[in-house]
Image 1 (tube, rainbow, N blue to C red):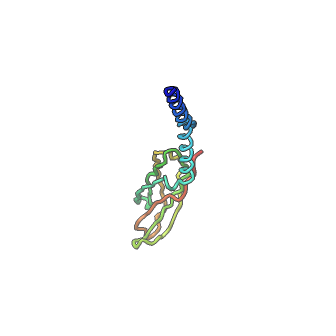
Image 2: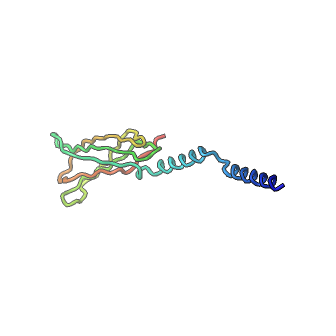
Image 3: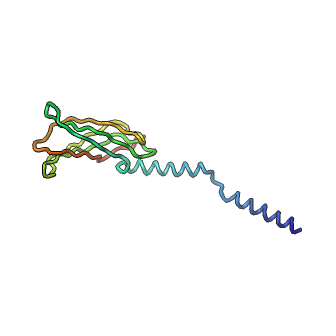
Length: 137
């Protein structure tokens, strides 16, 4: 009798443990993946990085070139707007220009850009930063 009671108790314990996790692990993974992608798509500036350099060409144009890198794991971005700020020797802003990089920046990928423009008088340095981007698809 004791053995039967002990076996019945163990069987109930095993069934209780098995029924606790009715959701498949892949369902949880897909939900977290979707949540991560939504977060990335809603906050492109947190995941896009820019680095650039500038020089003056023979036509006295300011040539600004660089690379935009997407640090997101799932979201792609397109139509990245780059603000180019021309500064004086003292660091004051002389002029700003906004240019668009019309390429898709895939997750964990980089895209190069190059802009040529008239150099404002008194420019000592140029700064570039990203002001906006659109999630792709």
